[in-house]
Figure 1 (cartoon, rainbow, N blue to C red):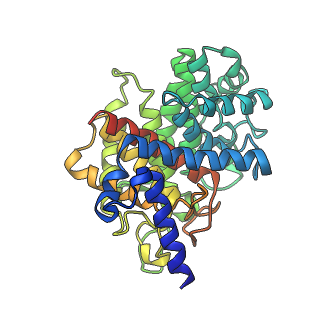
Figure 2: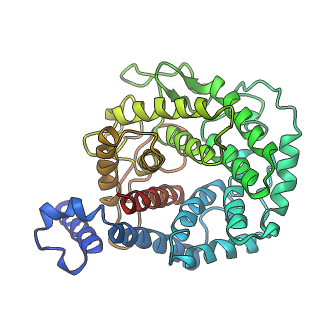
Length: 379
């Protein structure tokens, strides 16, 4: 009974948030349409972002502010702040950057610790302020100058030196590629693309069109006998892929190769969407954790909507996928703005509850909302 009441309250809250004071006039028929109006998208983005900012302001950071977890969240907050009239979100990021003296993390060559470079670079482009990227440029120069000739075997603490796990493809190449735009220096983008393909050669399964999380998963199997492909892990990859593609000039020799990888992955991911509109924690064994998971779902919905915005994906095929995914995401927002159903920190499929949340899930949600806002505005 309690669960039924909670679901009713959640449904009523989202209806009010999305469609305003006339929420209950024909609510069942109008809710799905209301989800896809620009003001509705912006309203729920504000609710989720404000909950996160308020949590940081009142309770502090659960993880270090320079950490990859928060850095992934910053990407979504930046995307919301880039929408006209939302400068307060950019102001919050600038304050964080200043408090950190625009430094990256302590482990210099580990991608997690310079994921924050994405946001520094985007802010530097926005405000034409080179001091925001000055420390990151020094680090990036040392990354570019490394030989990168070490095999990616999952041993000897390789993750501290190379992109040897799939999550790194959201953390590292994105940071370098945006820095390339901020500095007009192609060396950073060239390194990003070269190392992307090095990691892909190691972890990408060309039959399944999915990435293993790391070398320790290459021979593992799920309970149903399928290969282990982690939802958020592949979400990191697909979201990282479109963010690198944003920085590729039209004449880049790898552009078509990236586009093929993107389309192959997009088709596979779309085919794995569950009836509830989400992707469960395990992509090929969704019944192992039979509940929606919003961090992977958020990154997929973001990347697919990006493809629609850039005319790389067919609307008839992918728009229904995006609509269902957005409905799954918004239905996971609590009345106070907290995003639930986010799998906690890990490296493999795991349990999820409606009360589990994490900052990177917020980042994925806001990235999705920003792309959806653009798409609706253009159609």
